[in-house]
Length: 553
Image (cartoon, rainbow, N blue to C red):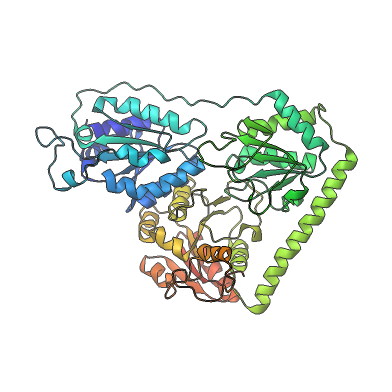
């Protein structure tokens, strides 16, 4: 067996079931050994045409499988191409093992010594320095026999909370080395976060019980389905607002009256639960309020500047913290007055109904004017999708215009916001959950960043039918909105460098890539196109819908 074959066996023993690969010349031993190893001895190989797709698919697969996945790329160019989605995984705490070959260190005499021109050109001073800002741990193997221990260490670091990506570099000589016998490997272990201090949790419970306008803010608690259900129970028990019901994940049902946007300036108790940006200080800053942050990194220590102040920071998994809170209320250790609960409920219900009326009024106006806006397109997609579909959103979808009441049905863009994530992530999710109906929403700009040809090939090769919806507005809309910071208000005016010289014909591109492709510019046409596309996917054919949308001014 080669060092590459040993890597395969080691990954499988460490619990990695699939790896996503865009290979290079250093992988010859691994590729040959893959053919000869029994499938029970190695992870399944998923071939990707680009490192962008490979890293994004690993991200989505890890989300849905709740296990680390591996990405194998070719030396420096491969690492550089994978970096945007490695950065996304870093900011979202997703366990990915990035593995790259390294150019040969020897010019002759060893299996794997330099043989072609790029083996000189791809030599760099320190590849670990390239990835170090975006991983929890990095290591370059010094001999093939180190591979099993390196893999076990990589998995336990990636999976220990807070989770995140790691990096392994392996020189070509070690990938191609001949091994006479197997090397022992220990199973990786995963650490658990400490339990919250009971006295701190009780203090927080008492603050929630006595407050007139308590608010829970979360962006990522719903990654864990258990936290979703506990948060739902807590909100109903205390009649407390939960904001960002649908953010990075479905954190809380936006069908609940307690999901209406809260006025933070009125809040007298704020609990931030797994949220990197709980509010925007430039817009509203809650002052003279009891504030607590809870999470696996409650003070966001990976960030250079954060800018938020709290009275308490609790290092805990969201589910464990919520369980302890609920126990205090259910056991009667902490009580909330009946009149206070009724006041909270009445205000929340009134605010929720007003909020929903405002959203529906916006949709009604768009329909009456015949405008296919992003909010109307979002609503129509929600109407067209089968029940319990999974939506991956890279910026363009407006989740408030759909209803989400189950965890694991929506995944928003990572905090890092590096474009080129959604398509691969959707395919990784589909690979982990093949029975699910998976849809991805992209803008026309992010559609290009996602390397759609690579995504189309992955979908076709591994029989992963999915729906891709492109909100095609002919510009970088977020950039255009930012012009308002400079006093710009004429958003219908074309701005060079923001508006594209001409719109992208995403429909024709979709047809060329083998998708069942549709295009629509009017609401009634969008209804028909989305309906046909959904039917195609249900028949096992990937579909693309090019929605020529108008901006929501």
